[in-house]
Image (cartoon, rainbow, N blue to C red; front, side):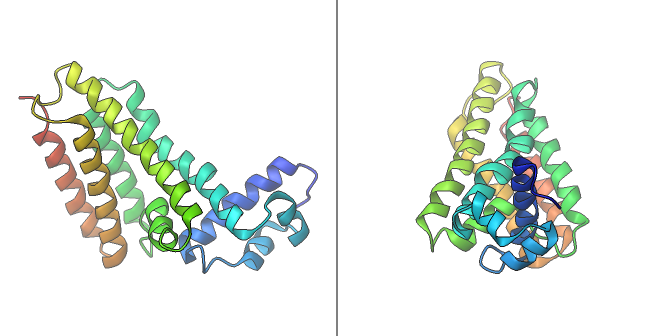
Length: 200
């Protein structure tokens, strides 16, 4: 791969880097393997990223944040039924994970669990993505409450927190168990919770 298009080189490094981090964790991700897969020199890498840690922050800010937004932010903007949309998006993502071997879980949560106790920067960057996700749910649930879809006893902020926790908990359990049935149970449980907060 040539380096004549710096933006394409940078994007390729991030995409391959995200693959390596997802499979091996940030600490286990090999810079040498990333360079080999991309055909980029070490000098070109450090032209774009001052350190491997800065590279990791950028993976969170650009690739992982983009992935979370695509699944959990954008689909909620125009939907008429927030609760159904959340359920369908989770089921769609769970179906992809069912095909993985090994089941790798959520890239955001995996990286947060690995690095947040060790590095304040990772904690700040991953929390920003979690906050965006949770705020998206809270805003959507506010709209659901205003349109009469959400049960009046449900607080949108609390329900948003519970939903993110339930989704990430299910994905963590699936990663730990390596049992696709965990995703089936999680899907069923999430839909049950969503229906329990729907106005009757």
